Length: 260
Ligand SMILES: NC(=O)c1ccc[n+]([C@@H]2O[C@H](COP(=O)([O-])OP(=O)(O)OC[C@H]3O[C@@H](n4cnc5c(N)ncnc54)[C@H](O)[C@@H]3O)[C@@H](O)[C@H]2O)c1
Image 1 (cartoon, rainbow, N blue to C red):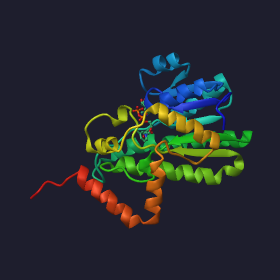
Image 2 (image 1 turned 180 degrees about the vertical axis):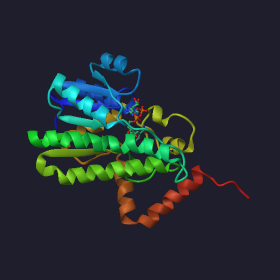
Image 3 (image 1 turned 135 degrees about the vertical axis):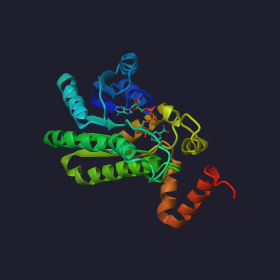
């Protein structure tokens, strides 16, 4: 897909990767770029970038429906929906309380399900459309120190795969964006779940936007701003036990058990 002359919605456009994507779509000549976010900075950052702000909370199906309806009334049919908003690593595993699992599940997974629930019928009727979801390399591999992030990003990848298979004959394309570390608010701080990501090197949000433009043009399913992620995925598929062994070595390095 070429983004020129398209109507595009980007969630999480108030900052970070979503803002860089929205800006890039504007500079590539999109017909209208709609930036959705809960951030109080949304209007200011969007208007400075030529993006149309619409306040939306992606953890609410009603809010996603309103976003879609308002966009289509004001700007016409949505060609590309970018489900990008997400939250990062709640540290911990099964002990994380249910309400926190539910919160990250709603934002990182149900958001994509609700976008598909309300866009797929429209696109099927119109003969096509494009869904780009932002998962993470954590959805293909793992994110040390945070089960909720790892699990929700795996679910996001699984959903994107299923949609790509099921709706290709409805003319619907799906890609999934799976970066490693990107320099945004999400990679600030000194939690070990973040520092090990940072240790593998950060790219800029604008580099992610480059990869997205290329990936949309080529209509590849995986969009990988860090090309080494493809090697890691191959390594994992070739020999899962060796891959787990390598991950355990990283786990011991970044989360050392205290002696005695
Ligand atoms: N930064 C990284 O290293 C990295 C790596 C891989 C994947 N990702 C993914 O990229 C996406 C964007 O992350 P980012 O790094 O730009 O983070 P960010 O924190 O800079 O931006 C996320 C944006 O999403 C918005 N948001 C959060 N909850 C929302 C909600 N309920 N409704 C609407 N908007 C909401 C925030 O207000 C913020 O503007 C996320 O899905 C994240 O998991 C990030």
